[in-house]
Image (tube, rainbow, N blue to C red; front, side, top):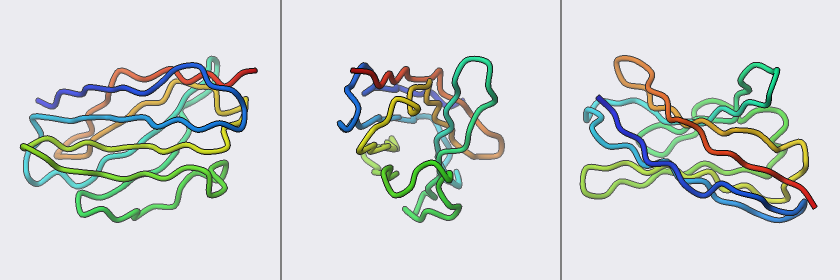
Length: 118
């Protein structure tokens, strides 16, 4: 069973930056990747990006990213922490951001609210 600790969300003004963190524990040493989706009310989840356990972005970021977001991963004390650095935020980036971990199955975090508004 995988447990997540998610942090870093909140309210931010357009043009500013925010960094989300998703700490996963309990995953096997063979997990393949972690990543992010986002979702706004009334819409399906939207692909943000994914990073392998070796730190490789193996699938392109979502089209809306346009070079503004970067995913990274760090490992310490048997816990893997994935980060989503978001720069030059826009109001349309307002969403709940969900992290996931791919092992034998896909595990989901509970979601982090990000609100971009002046």
